[in-house]
Length: 455
Image (cartoon, rainbow, N blue to C red; front, top):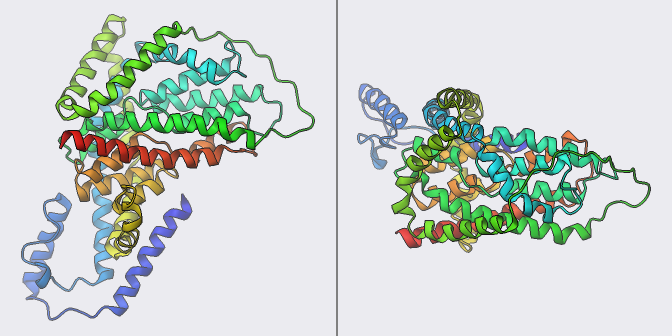
């Protein structure tokens, strides 16, 4: 991500420098006092998001804002905007993390884990059902499905450590490791809570409308990732030669529901997707209130100390909002520099015929490229796109769906494989890249279907 970030800034500066040197200066400006007053009003208006250009300065009478001066002003204004956005995110993030803490304390994570356990046993025949790796993988995928990213990462690292105990070739990824990470990076997402909060923060009137699009896109991406992984593992066989004996570590097996219960749950989930797409605009206002009341009620019936657990989760929301400020400032400033310099516009104009061929607007292309590299960077690109085009526009829905239905593939590969010192990842990166591409295409399909039924 460092190289991408530096490249964005270098391109923006270079493009602006060329424009500064080559573009002719405008005619004589308006009276000095008039220009100063109007420029101050213009900056306030931009910060408040009310207008992009002050009425005193229509395009044909704009003051002499040279490209480099515009770049400087945009950098300063965008940095302030990023901080204000992060602080505005704190309230919604605290609410959602507080509610999800109730779900975790009430055992909802265990319910989801028991539902997917029969499926996991069939996907990972080489991992004993009573091995700690199986329990850790199930808990990781369950936490990801519920949007509990903070809980998912420790389970994921624990799963990799336990899978490495079964590894006959230390330093080389096993089939089970690659498949686990393929599912992890394209994990089915039931509740993209963070994206919903971002959409609320930038003024969406239908923030939870991405629930059906995210679910459909992540289901398609996960199915494709599993199929690709199983097909490609034959082309990357484990190395021949000496192998160590796996450690036979027994654990407490995760008790699963009967197979018919799992099948019934997945059938119900599949049936809910077309209904939520068709009636999404009518159902979306109900989603957050019903979810909140339902989880509060479930936690209360389970004997959870509702107030204390909610406050504990809400505290995490404040910390998360403050922690992302520097990342959001960095990426929003970089994106704004590309926009202000004109480099982003030139790139999107050049690529528009190609990306439009399969339904991806050129304005959403940066999101598709950055998402596998950096979660915070993708958040910045998503927010910038929603602020420019509107959170409830086609582009706003598309970037939100891409963000909610995918993962930072290369970050996950680096962290999880690094935790067990895997040097030979075999086909894992290729599966991840292919799944990301399919996830983008699935997001386009899901959003197009949503707008077709709800326009």
